[in-house]
Length: 298
Image (cartoon, rainbow, N blue to C red; front, side, top):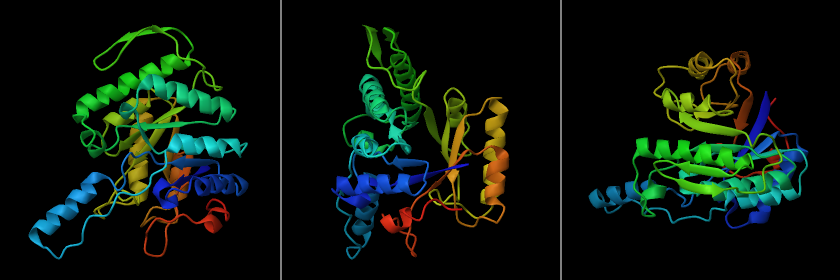
């Protein structure tokens, strides 16, 4: 299994050079990939609303946090690409429907050429607030259809052929978007999902793999009724039931309450990547160059 390092953009503030240094250090230390988050506003607006609701009932409640600097992931990854040679570059995850698919196709193809074919695309729906707060309506089913249309268009643009398309959300009239990516037939696409929802896994089999979350994985809260090992086995069994040619799967390297057998279960079930982020003793995410330089977990 390979090891990916997730770097959370806001931890660097406006210091883009620090994020680049982290990416360079990750390659030097033997990490296989560096993945950046993709938010437009951080903290996400719902967190601010929770504070506002609390203050309406208790004036002594704390004020909502101010929005933080959040570097664009793809431009930052371009800086990392220019100073590295081996490490894979991608996002966890890009809300595809928030960007025009033709612009996304060209931006990523350009980065793939600049990096000599080291780009992957983590793709998902994104957060409701980051659409509604900018005037776009949110309907999960409609947004899922928009995601599927956008991914189809991006893939077709990466072929280099002239594209005509008429869908529910996009219309394209006989146009090619060039250049194509360095990788052929295109940049690997890995789709997001939250287990035990089945639909994201059905989408994943049409692409190159998954970046799923599961209850109790360290990001999504669990109720303690199951273990990371059982969740991994269940989601991987379902994924394998859908296809004889599964793609890459990214899962956490060190979820809470894991047993000594966790990594053996991951490997035996076909997980290909383990991801890590950096946390302090209180569980807060940090950006720590010294820890990055220690390399991926053994």
